[in-house]
Image (cartoon, rainbow, N blue to C red):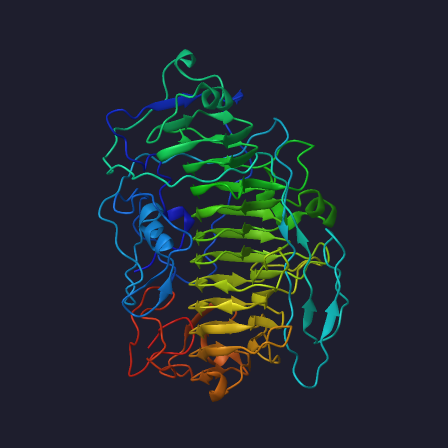
Length: 604
């Protein structure tokens, strides 16, 4: 059983933290009170069938067994020998209650949880400028070309999107540049978190009858010094400007959420030099003409244990209408959704619409789970930190507005001085994600040629890429240059055309500096192309993959994007159980038949 695949099936829980005897509830008035209205969000499931079943809402909760003492450098080995971050394993229970049981023993079930009221979502107008720093690194795309083709190397300019030279049927290699995010708050050492109290079910919370009992604005409440660990802050209907949490080292989690029945709109969210903060259920988009092209939600290196869940995050209020935008409108609205630095930062169950980069997570032990990115003109998700998890996310409809070579998911290592490709990224898991280049009924001259999972600047040690579904027209479906002790198993990687293309491919190749990949397995995949070597001396194994020349003979409905298998497919029972994940992208146990099926779906 999986986490619910539809964002509409999940309740926006407005209270999930422990509320002890001394914990308090605060209410905050809006800067501009009133209803929040605007363009409605459509349903996104990236599937034309009912295979993405709605499930019972699963609440978030705080797990007292984790004690709030995550360590980015700690690691553990699960019962099946998987290497993972102990901090990440704890936070899977702490922030997100998991509704699927993995036979691999990786996820533990929560022991209790809290479910309360469900706020509404919407839009508003009017307000102030948001924080305008993007920061981060420009990623890189590339890899090895087939022997008959010549790769093209692109050289980017400083802090300027990379410009590509169009080359017919030739993969692209890019060299990334690095930008340093601007820090508004001085960095200070992060203290060790103290234990979190045991959760107790709260009583329902409603806004006070009169405005006199609520704080005038969020900044005034923060400046008062009254908020302590375990407290809850409820924002009333309307526009609240920028939500800033700085220099707040809470002993246990503080919740910031809409009041019951309210829709709280923020221009942006900034968290710096703080720990144990959970922001849930807010509507976040820019309304200022001076908003710039920065990140709507921003955390810095000096934070720990921060979570953002159930946000309705858009570049602007009208972002759900992105399919009608001109190039000028896309460029004007070129904003990053999340820019997340710091340790143990979570982004889960968020809806991100009409954006440039969706989620950039640069710190260790990041958890990016069950987010929906609908309409993007940069990269869907980036994760650069050790011991991070990217799971159950959905990305669709990519637009080309500049020289960026778009990826659904991208990662690259950073050296000691921040040079891309000069370090080693450890223990990254990318699983159960869906990446679709285009799902709209009509095309667009701005439609991009998307790459699926691009990891072009290793080294990458302990990477697991499994149970992902990718449909794109770019060459690189899944590519790792510089893989160590890694696996690429049971993925479905198909072109936007059913036949006539030998890509997107799955590729394992050396690092750009020539360092060989080692001890890496590519198995049980259904793909349009395969460029993965077999080299026993280097521990490179490739087996039980199905290369489709006509994907329509393999999947239930290619045009309908139903990529479960036909009974007659070569992929049925084509895998090997020795490396197959214990369940498929839908949570179906493997195998159903005599052997696991190739691809992300266990169909027969």
